[in-house]
Image 1 (tube, one colour):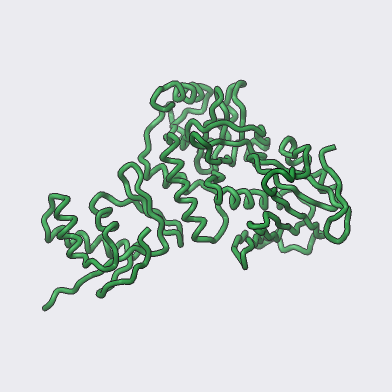
Image 2 (cartoon, rainbow over the protein chains, first blue to last red):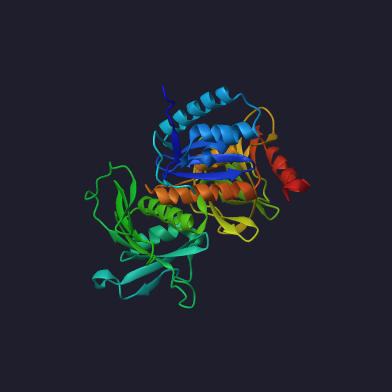
Length: 102
Length: 291
């Protein structure tokens, strides 16, 4: 069975700032606030809508952090599902338009 | 005589003008009622400027016309709503309706003759004006100690009014409830406000550079603790006053909160409610890394 590609993009309804090494993200639609850890920040910053999530994990997460690739992929999918549920990331099985990298 | 008179008011009524000067941004308030003008003078005290007219050589000032309604014509039960409609801010609550044109810096409010409705309108107007300038109003007491301003923020009951009550005689109170902050060349400046809390006393109409913001927690000892930047931004956003349902302004405030946290020391101040807590505040200023 072929593996499904996941594409992720940042929502246009968010504001994000890096401060003192931490990435803070706010959903301006409901003012909910999130702090991302280092790995999540890498995925968030790479969420351009065109790069498949598995490529982001392989080329950026696994390159920058000492993690098991399978575990990293599973963690990334869980993180993406959570941020998608909170309106921070858009997820699709095909490439997304430029939602709004800021 | 603080108010000045002018004969070009709406409906050809002789208008009385008062400049209510908060945060160095005077808003010229016009009313046809001498009684209401006196209510404003009593309510805003030293924040009512003797120079009611705007100086034409400066940037355009802010103007607000007050139309008084008889009691009973306004529904007291509606909650506050602030929204942008066709380029104008519309503010509605049970006791008033107001509009504000940001570009023309003019607006009006329709209310009964009471000081509380216009007080709410002024808080909203200043929050909107400040948001566009990189400043904000925040739920915090503030005071000047040795030439520097300190802010004490927290939820209701955290100790804002207690801190102001415990202040030594040489401390200048800026507010016990709502602090007024604007960016300055070297950080942020805090201004006094007439927006009082439990103390029921307006702050002094003066300003000082901000030295620190403390989030208050009552405890059994006096202690200052670091907060992570994310926690500081999270707490600050929770306490910033903002009324408008507008995504762009919320994003602007988030950027401002991040900038404030990057430029001003933010700490948690656990305090036992007696006067010694102010020694902690003075000592904080003397520690070199906070300068």
